[in-house]
Image (cartoon, rainbow, N blue to C red):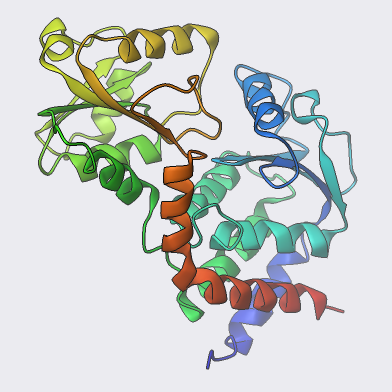
Length: 316
């Protein structure tokens, strides 16, 4: 049986929340919008300047684009419309906390969403009205994960390895497209027994982040994959959210490489049209794998969600 939270910590959470409140949140996610609509929302955000961090919080994860607006409220940025809306601090912050805990993820209990919520608050400027809300959300989400054992058995990086290991022919090389936390985690996981080429638009920054990483990982600009790698054969993992038209063209050239064998697409919406040896997050093979992995975490996710909702519902 789960134990109740420490009352002293609860008091600290309540006092922190008193200095910042959410008026409403607007969201597009995989439960309310089609893949095409969600993909369009992601594309609208690429390069958008109009997401003003002085009034709200932008959260963009694998399967959602959300805007949390501080009181007093302004309008949501055009980039995330049309969207569903939740009104009121308690309902909005409950949703955000459940997201951070991994209770609303495609892969229940996955670790990256907590880091993504953390990063969203880290991007807010000093003095932003929602910064105290971030402290509350992350504390409660961490408590819920620990208290109810809400941890994924098959995380995204494990999913990439599992899918690649099903290939009958295992190339020596794997090419990972992306520079964020997911791409880095996938590269680290696959670097134990493969040569990894991590392709990004900002290789210098990524090299600094991976300075103490695996010697089997090379960081390159997306246009600089050596011909020897192309000709020698490789598997491809797509793990990026920055899919501008030019970036998609570069990915298409990688997919059309003569000896590329298997494509694993971890992006929110499928980057490519259906083709042989292409497995994305909505492919039946992948959804069956995720469903099997989720079964042990279903009850933990429900319990964590109820605990979080009760926390906010019980406030005076």
